[in-house]
Image (tube, rainbow, N blue to C red; front, side, top):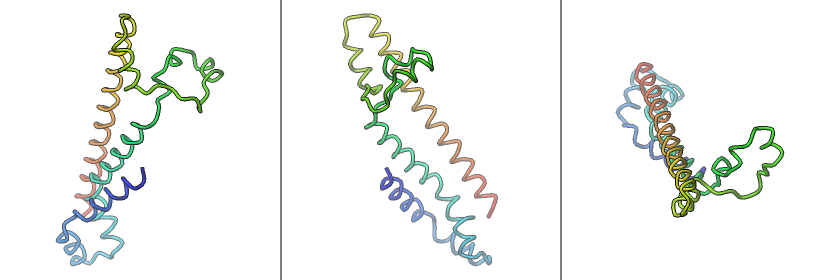
Length: 143
């Protein structure tokens, strides 16, 4: 996860136009001010993209405990029975397995899991976009 974030952050920082850095230095900004007021606010969208890619790659390998049947239990019930070190099916595996079943109930669960998965991805993208807009907008005002 960390190499993905670091490589994307490095590329995002390299993509900041040198004219912006030179202009900030020409206006009398110190090196620290150039980094905090020009370099990082301009590179934040690229850095956030790297973070989202790393989380997506990590999530692809992990198993989501909420995709199992245990989500229907109460919180106290879950605390007693959920063992965090046990493997559980991810959303993708759950959708694949249930979509091919002959029972209508399981096919409906597959559609519900697909909807939840799409909504999770949409929410993550919207949060990332709103954070990057705020960071870029505040960075432009600070210069």
